[in-house]
Amino acid sequence: MNVLNPHSPEKTTVEFDLAGGCFWCQDAIYRTVRGVSFVESGYTGGSWPNPNYEAVCTGQTGHAEAVRVRFDPDIVPAEVILDIFFASHDPTTLNRQGYDVGTQYRSAMFPHDDAQAQLFHDAIERAQQLWNDPIVTTIEQPDIWYPAEDIHQDFYRKRPDVGYCQVIINPKLARVRQHYSAWLET
Image (cartoon, rainbow, N blue to C red; front, side, top):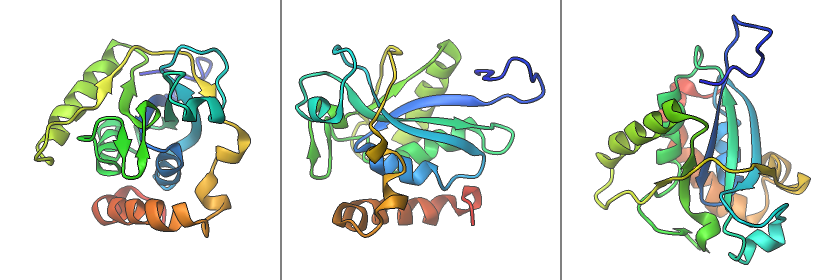
């Protein structure tokens, strides 16, 4: 686990980099989870330096739209964060989430260390029991994290009436609320 403030040994937080389709969806979901102190949309897993949204959307940079989620495991276990990840997107579709198609929408996890890689493997095994088709989520080498542009941060809260939010994000939020309400802010 990552100690983000080494001067405060009593307070440990963990950070996961997760890609599950459009980062607006994952961002909206994790901002509702108790114990999550930070969510940032960004790009990782690609080959171009300093990518931006337009470049990533071409599919040519190799980056995935992802979220960086920082949480307190004393409030919400890492396993719950990962189970929510698998409940909030379809991990059985390769390079696609609904109408969003391309490698930038792949289902991927980017462990910061070997312990996280093991947690991610365990989460895939746990989640596979819930899906008829094989999970195609990849566990990829950690890569440089590039924060997305400001317009993409907390997109759902700032623009809840946008069609994408209504048609795509709202049903995902409802599914997470149905199964993980005990872990969500009221």
